[in-house]
Every structure is written in C-alpha cells, then in structure tokens.
Image (cartoon, rainbow, N blue to C red; front, side, top):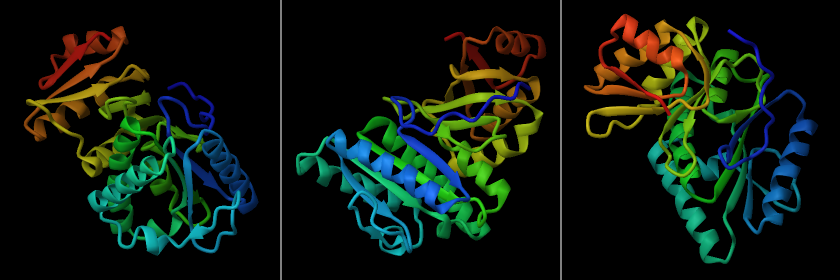
Length: 259
C-alpha cells in the first residue's frame, strides 16, 4: 500500500462534506471561521452547531441537542434538507454548516447511528448546495471510531486512513476512493454494514474512479457484501488490475466496468 498525505480539508465540487479532526480548539475555530467566511462570501446561509463554542464570524453557536437531539439518521437528514430549502427560499445560494459533533459519538450505539447519518447527509450534500464541516475532538473520540467517521467523507485531515467511502457529486451514488487492501478490510465491512448503500435493480454500483489500488481480498469482500444483499457488485474503475483479478479469480457476484 502506498502512503499518501491526508487530503487538504477544503470543500470542492466532489467534497462539500469534510471532516476536521482536531486536538487544538483554537486551530479548529480558525478552520471554522474560514469555512463559514467562504460560505458567506458565496452567498450561502451559515450556521454553527456546537456546545460551549463562541460566536464565529458573527454566527452564534447552537447547542448540539437543539439541532440533533438523539440522532435518527433519516430524521436528521430531513431536518437539514428543510433548513436548506428555507435558506434557498430566503434568497441564499445554499447552506453551509459547521458542526462540532463530538458529543454525538461517545457510545457504540451513537457511533453506529452517526455513521449512518454521515453517509445519508453526504448523499444529500452531493446533490444539493449544502456543505458541512464535521468537527471531532480527537482527544475525546475513540481512534478507531474517528477513523471510520473520517472515512465517510471525501475530504478529511486525518492521516493513516487508507480509503474513503462517500457519495458521488451530482448523483449521490456510492463511491470508494483511496486504497483498498488488507489493512482496511475490517473497516470496510463495518462501514458497508452501517451505511447500507442503495441497491438498484439488483446491482450495487460503486464509482471507483478515485480508487488508486485494490487487492483481491477487498474485491471478494465487496462481492460477498453485495451477495448478502441479493445483488451484484458493479465496480466502475479504470484500474486494469481490478478486471484482471476478477477474471482470474472468477469472483461471483462482482462485475468490473472500465470507466
């Protein structure tokens, strides 16, 4: 596996949803200030969610419990969809949110629920003018959980995370970027179970154009997961090695399309 530097935590056309893991509160506030200022300059409405935070860029912080309550992934995504609709109706170009969400990932049940929410809101952001920075205090979040949560963002600042499972800009479909090898197999299994990606017409389509490396174990794992959902995994990737491996190993339940 090649080791790459962590991607810069800035929103792009394919990364409106970013994760910022921090250990220095002032550093986080500086990133939040820049993120909200960029949103305001683009005409977006801006919001700040977090307990005990000062105003940032003149934006008062809203308590986490007032916005998220007990996280229900579908209900929370609906909340942000409605907030975006209100922002657009008020003449804004979109909605940009900074959320310091550390209090929502303290227990195993919370982590599982919030991981599902992260993927669902990522799909919403991929299709609509909604962008968000999810901030986690790395001193207070289990390292393995933090890695999983970072993996659910196309853009993050956490080193050592080998792959990213996120939504495709414009469609919200499932994408996997980075590198899939034996070191990420356990995390991939956990995340697929937690986000339960959409199966359409018996196919689980994965946009893997951002995948730099994949080994045979990961291909077999994707196929096994899809079969468990009664589907065929369709991996769309320009990597010639992926197609060769599937052909050589005759992996059932997996098709590679050169894209």
